[in-house]
Image 1 (cartoon, rainbow, N blue to C red):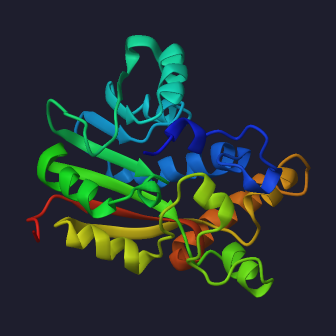
Image 2: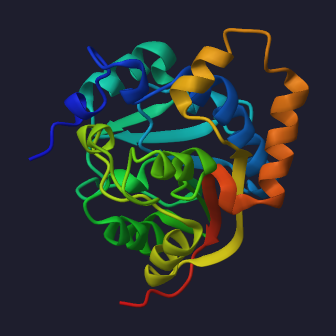
Image 3: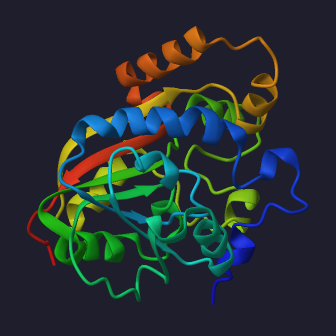
Length: 250
């Protein structure tokens, strides 16, 4: 049995072993929304793995009909206190949740790598939760991010897709690259219509958090790293797919 509250808890962790960073909130989330928005369609959105709602709030200008599924009861209680009835929250694991309908947009950001059986959940999305004309937005940390490759050269991790002790502590089960992410999506029957990356990144998250407290990094630099990431998706902080429903391989 997994303790999802413990996996999301940063209490007592050192800076470079956190689950969530200001870099994620202040840099990555706005750029993810910017990357996803041109592909949004329809009126409803399902967010799988909403944590405390930090990313959820960014969907409010785009959708009036938002549902979130989150396994941590502590995280979902905090999210409910923030949003009230504006968003429907369901406290459940993805493997056991009973959803009443299908959705035009489904978002999973930095969640798939935590799942014990990612292809099972992707099949549920394809076969049961995604509307006929819906789209799945699937984003994961990138095994080939330069910051990670530098860590290999430093001897901090054994290979690009290794799972560090800190990542394991926070529930990571796999570290995806674009090819393995697409492999799992296609095996679940999904049609991949777009693949890209978000933000060229050569520094670790804890290093970014420190830099963002200074005037060293300008908005122009952040914009440049975002645009360069579109040119070199395999060297981005995060990789993502946009998928449409297809026929299951099972």
